[in-house]
Image 1 (cartoon, rainbow, N blue to C red):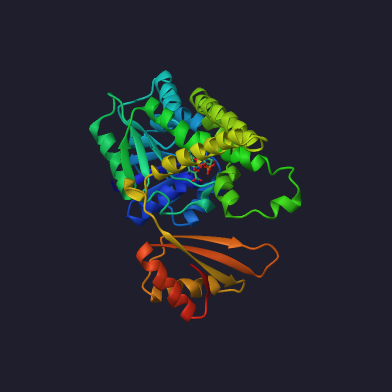
Image 2 (tube, protein in one colour; image 1 turned 60 degrees about the vertical axis):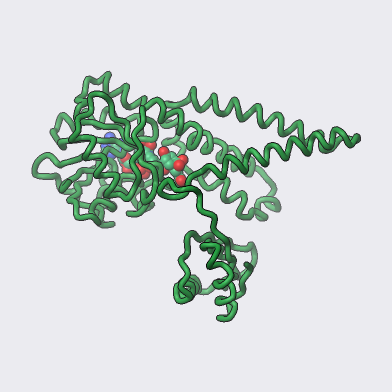
Length: 361
Ligand SMILES: NC(=O)c1ccc[n+]([C@@H]2O[C@H](COP(=O)([O-])OP(=O)(O)OC[C@H]3O[C@@H](n4cnc5c(N)ncnc54)[C@H](O)[C@@H]3O)[C@@H](O)[C@H]2O)c1
Ligand SMILES: O=C(O)C(=O)C[C@]1(C(=O)O)C=C[C@@H](O)C=C1
């Protein structure tokens, strides 16, 4: 692939465009919102100038309900040799494309399983898709050139291609993406009118569970409208589990010991099922989940402290696999949690202590 077009320069379109330009592809950016396209271009994601002729691949990164309409417009203009979209649902857009009588030989549906709770080009990063699954949903119509162009896009973005049927995809994401989004929103919604004294105690647990509750409602109405029945089925099953959990909690308050024991067994079952489910979530590149150890460093709230810490961790020869920063309310310090390989954790904690950092290992 040498040339590409990205239609819709929000979070996903701009992230893909950044990844492609970094690999030397000429990317042409389009968005009905001129500011979004210009911002993406200023970030180095490509040019807002139209291409001279058809590009090798057009990536349609607009809200799911607009995929059919935008593909129709692109094909009418002869924008590209091959087309893909990145919408979070696949069966709905495919149905619309068929109903509009569009060219389905040079189109393939796709969905990168990576994103953020923020929208727009300024939230984009070139490495957003690295090591993530990227679903492709070819049909009997899809020609080889189009499948190959999509595979090349996935490879250039550092993602892992997974070929699936559109309906299977939608069922899978109901479980691993759409229901979790609603549950995150529901947990965060409990905070809407909560006492300030309670909310200010928020630690990492509630932050982890509610990060995606900051997502864009308009986009999610679109996504959920195209997968409502399957997501409702997942939530129906969850409602049964929730009712059982409430019953177990009530039992824990009972006067007789037998009922209390039953309650404890119910809660233990929930926790153990959760442990098992969580352990099945793959690590990057589809590898088995990697266990890291956390070294927590107390950081003074001064400019440059984080950079200095990362520099010292590097000097100790330790790779940071993940990092989380927690600010303590009303204090001038933060807690930086460094996830590192278990073999490196002890040495890192000792090395940082020697260098004067406050460390909790
Ligand atoms: N946000 C995520 O985490 C995520 C992850 C994977 C896939 N997706 C999918 O990617 C697509 C884009 O999502 P996003 O998060 O980048 O949204 P976004 O709101 O950041 O960007 C969407 C962009 O599309 C533009 N747009 C709307 N109508 C258009 C049209 N007719 N022509 C050209 N541009 C148009 C908007 O102006 C906006 O800039 C959606 O289909 C979404 O389901 C999102
Ligand atoms: O991590 C996030 O913030 C996301 O929004 C990611 C996420 C997901 O549920 O995994 C959300 C919707 C997309 O269709 C794909 C990815």
